[in-house]
Length: 240
Length: 244
Image (cartoon, each protein chain N blue to C red):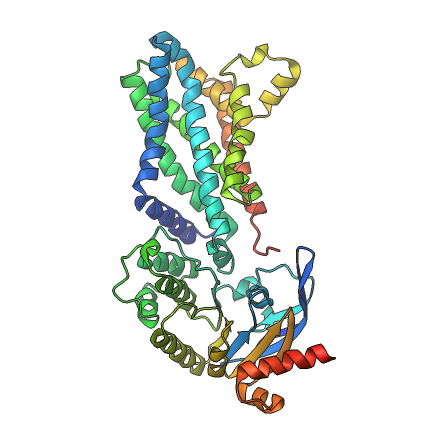
């Protein structure tokens, strides 16, 4: 393991039921980077993220996060995780949700106002989560992940259903966090988000097709956009 | 265990109730409404006084069981539990946080039911009213703890509702409400002896008939409390940080 890797995955295999959903996945996520995890729905993105945050039962291989095995008790207030389905309480207000999770994380109370501001939910503090729109709901869930001082953020499709302006603001926030040294692993199934990442992990059918930067990927495949690069990688893989 | 996280969890659950007034009203009033119904079904204060103590145990027990198992299942099936399991919260913090929040609701529920039974429905008790409240409250907590435990075995809310007849009804049938436990056949009496609700009903019956605090009464209370605690600990064991 190099000292600059925040996450080191080696030979990870995961079964869900009888199906092998991750087959020997190995990758390394540099500290302070924004890494995009891309691939079609059902390719194993969420399973890989669950393995990194330590809630997935794995069949083989190892996952090292910030120097400790994934799921170690010492990691629990160093990682921020936002699940794909918004994981907040629908029958609480935005602020009540954040205050509860802040208490669990021993984060200062002032964090609540900070994260509300960061995800652009100002004015919605006392609104019940069940009355929020889809985009506001996923931003509430994202805000919980930003509480405390996480060194690693694992965000499962955080920008789904957001209007382009908000999406842009969130990516600016992600880059600001990375500049502070926070490592971000962000999944998406939309290729146009890939260009915003420094590093890309391309997945298909439980396997990693590429662990590279967008520019290197374009150069390697001789294509002009990432969608084409992905297709070219899939075809190359199937031709073998 | 971490007290501040535990209490934050209790506060969070009570806050959730605050936003759901209808559920609170149902939980607080339902046992009382059923007791009122029963009083008029019997149409006799004496007959009501014989059945009521057992039902002061059964109704809160059954209602808290179902409410708790559905609420915790909701936490398990929405992603909030998965998120909490990545955070520095202990499993017991979460479960005791739940038990404490539901315990508060259960206590209100029992106070209302006992109050109405004594003042309006003509329930006569020989022992201490407060002991009656303590036993009924403990019993509601037992329902809560069993509900927390049972929710681990349900994948959907539909299944959780089906656990109510499985976990609750046999205990109600065998607790001595319909036939004295001593008159049951050996197998049934043995079954009745391993069901915690039987001891709660025995304790309530003892309190209503006599003011004496016997060793048997204390033993029964300890059994009910221990079963509740055991169910909570088993619930913590079934709660997994890592899932398939």
